[in-house]
Every structure is written in structure tokens, then in C-alpha cells.
Length: 353
Image (cartoon, helix red, strand yellow):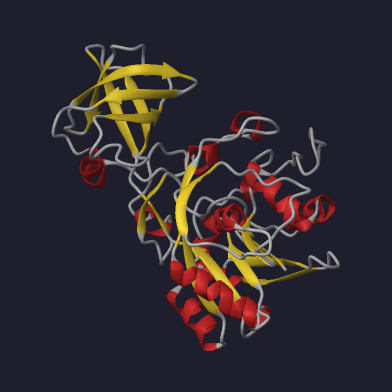
């Protein structure tokens, strides 16, 4: 593994066949690499083993965001040149607002008109910079409703490349969504949660392990390497989060009984660490976060982390290094590659506890 520019920032070489282009079936049959945070010891199992690895009184925190059909094709007017758009549906964008941002390459200069496909209206490019454009929408056009009918799930590009395809398959509309997804708004799935099944959630409850939810709408920064997404100096695009009062109460109950807080995914971790207060627990509420967790971060809320195997040189891998320690993270990734684990969004998982 190559050295990076700061602690926790490293590359690794992954054989292409290790990139998962479909999920495990059933979901909780995915492999699980268990990393001891105290000793660095590694063990191997399946995600369905999670209830036996935790204990009564522990709290598992999920991110209940829902991936929206935010990807769409368009044609330049009048040339017909094809453009791929990933709409950034923040706040009222696409419904109440008449403008919306999108990730796009080659969409043209301000004034360019694009026709959404299939059977969509024309939109006008207002600005274009750094791969992001702003478009003006027609009056009384509900972009979100149109995308729900005609848009595509924004499957990560490396999955499409691995498959040799340009668009998601019909089954991805189900498999690239957690079974507990509730709140529309994400441009990518909180992938650690993809492993959960109704039976796994029921088994956690049966064993006295409580679950609670936060929401973080995953933005496009998840697709960017750290050199673009904000490491080491520039913060990534802010992402909206919410912590409901019932989750605060669940956290207080777990702490009161000596239970551990286990975050499912880096997104749930970032929410909890964003709202944490020294000596004052976590408050309910909502807001925006640009938090990048690096080695040296003092974790105030979580005691365990369930996460997938992430792309090199991303803020996700930086967070894992911060929690597990850089050397243990390197050792875990090396073992996962040697043992044939499947990587990235549809891949296997790691429990650090």
C-alpha cells in the first residue's frame, strides 16, 4: 500500500475481480471481517453473525436515508449531443425552486439548452464550473416527480464499468436501497446498511440490542477522491442530516445501561460525531455537515463501526483509519484482499469493535 499525504491517507491496489458488481444474496450472507479495536486481532464471519458479536444493551444506529432516482440523460438542443446528469436535490430543489444543480461533464456553456430524456422538457444551463452545472427548470415542472418516473438510480460508476453497462438494472432499484430506507434525498446508498435484512433486524431486537435511526442525505462528494473532496484543507459539499428525539432517548438508555454505540456506516458516524457535545450527550435536531474525520479525531459517541471496504484516497477510508488506527486499517485491508473479500458498495463488510 502506497503512502499518502497525511496519516490515514493511503492507496492500495485492488484486483478488478474484487469489485463487487452485485450484492450478496441474501444480503446478510455478505462476509464480515471483524477487527478488534483494542488488539488489532482479525476474525472472519458473515454479517448475519452480527447479533452474536454485540451484546444486550448495545445500540445500533442506522442511516435511514433513501436513494432517489437522480440520474438522467439529456440531449443538447439542437445538436443532439448526449449528456449524463446527476441532479443534486437539496432542500426545495427540483420541486419548489426553479433552479437545480447537477453533476455533468460536457453540458456546455451558460445558455445551452438540454432536453431531458425520455419525454422530458428543455432546461437551460445557467452556469457551469468544475463539473457542476446549474439549470433553470420550466415553470410548474416538478423535477422530482419526473425523476421518480423516468430517472435512473445513481449506481456508482465503477459498478457500471465492471458490468460494461451504462445504466442500472431493474433489480438495482431494490438492491441499492436499504430495507429500512425512509427519507428521500440521497445520491448514493449508505452502503453498510445494504447488508441488513428484516430477519437480521428482528434477531438484534430478540437479543436485546436496540436500533435507532439518524438521517444523512449522501451527496456527490462520496464519488470524489480526497484530492477533490476536501483533503487536507477544503471541506466537501455540506450534507443535510437529522437526529430525531427518539434516537437521543435510545442513546441515553444505552449509555445508562453501559451499552456500546455501534454506527452502521460512515454516514451515521459523521452525524453522531457532528452533533456530539463534550459531556452533554447528543441533541436532537437537523442541519448541514461538512465534517471530515481524520486520524487524531476524538470519537465522542461511537464505540463500534460497521462499514464496507472503501475506495482508496477517499474521506470514507480516512474515517475508518481514524477509528481503527492506520496500521490496523492497512492490515485489515491487506487481509481482506488476500482472503478474497468483495469490495465497495455491493461488497463485504468490516466490523471494528
